[in-house]
Image (tube, rainbow, N blue to C red):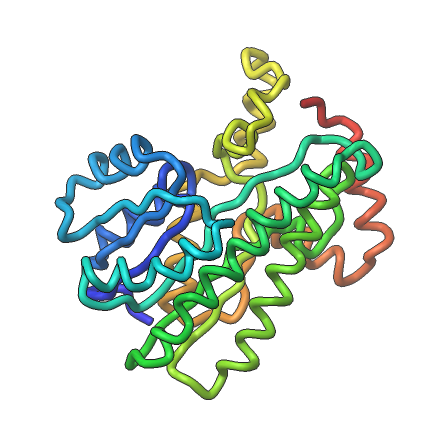
Length: 272
């Protein structure tokens, strides 16, 4: 679905990939309904994009609030007149600790934001999308959604649920006007750790070695957003974003046990 002249909802629109998605969608002629917890962050996104309220409208709410999610389509349509797509981008990671050390409350929060928030908004907008000449749902999973990362096990489980949920939607909606895409980003240079309430990373970024390693591993939010929008416009079923995600996807398909053990060794070096 070409995004020009369409109205697209983007969650997590106040920073990182979400902000870049908004900016690039607006640049392609789309109208954007940005969703985020932070009003100031949404205002900053609009300021950077350089557009008025007729092109970008910020909606402040928690995506885990089912009742609010159900009312959002009506609010978006009241402002823009229609709505044609959603990119469920908002997400948080967990503490870098084993499942045994996580509380049930922490586990529920990870599942609620990463999985149920996506489900609530998809369910809310789908009836409207089915009435449109064409519409598109893009759900952001993760490379953690197809290969296990120790100390991010619950996050991975949530993103794996997003993967299967999205692929099931694709099968159910195949003969309708609604297209569906699941996205598996690799490492992207965002502040997801801070946004998840975990504070700043303890990795010393004043060390040039760490800076160089991070730059090699991470994709810029701008590049990631461009790849996601391209996948949306080409009606891709599934896309990996970043060389790391693409490589691990192939490796895990070829030898799951080897890939899992390799990731386990790498994660032992992570200090948060």
